[in-house]
Image: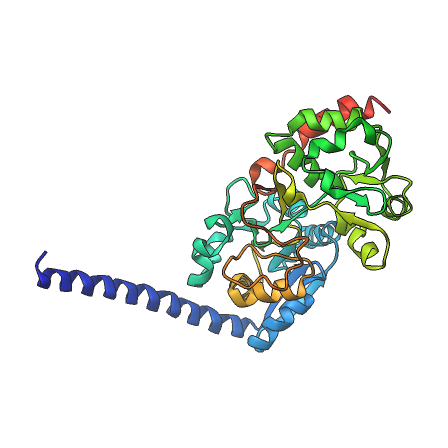
Length: 366
């Protein structure tokens, strides 16, 4: 191609890039101005976000952050009661995916979040793990995940069990461990849904593994976290299964000196589960402060926001891959080369096939 033609092409490429840049910058400027006029953003969140959004407040002092905190079920009841009364008070929700999907998404009270992403560094999916944004909802538009913790649902007594002897989930089905495993009650719902979904969806485990562990291993099931941790610590049961360590308090118990730990599921040949934990966000329809919500959302998903989330969120590994991971505890930090199964997306919300297995083999056994 003639040099003159190359120069023309280069000029138009440069011009296009400049126009695109000026376009988003102008839109961001207008949105920020409107957000400051609104003067407030209302977040319905778990309490982990308090310190995170203190950093946002410092950067945007003209947008007051109001946080309504609680467990997912509590927030769900409050939001739906408010809306029934004709009150639309919430802008953004941040928390677990269960409440988001089963209450807010199915209740049709969300607005598409995808179109609210504005900052180029947020929109650019190459900055995120797996090269894509991960959504939980059926349409991939409403429920965005920004956290991805390597998760373990199996723990052990450090005085009685050598973790090096476990390199597969099938090792837990060794007859030598029959009657020696305590677990959460598999009918508990949310407390065990993550691990059961991982086992069910993993092609090397699947329904066969679930049936075997529920029928052959003579599990001692409990719904009491303290009892479970105590039994594990004193060695009454050297192994624990189907147990999220944060929910049960296993990490805290270990920090207090009790002889318990979780298996590193990243070493198992079947790979490990990746949990979004409470790192999910959604935008309510009829939000009272839509521009402030848009600013808060884009800040949260930016490098700065995700670094604050990792720092103050406790045991969190952001799905952003362009930020330091030094402050992410090894027990939840993703590792290169591990075949993770992300517990997110439409295929991970239907528990009925798993519940059917439980009804057939667990409740029948009882």
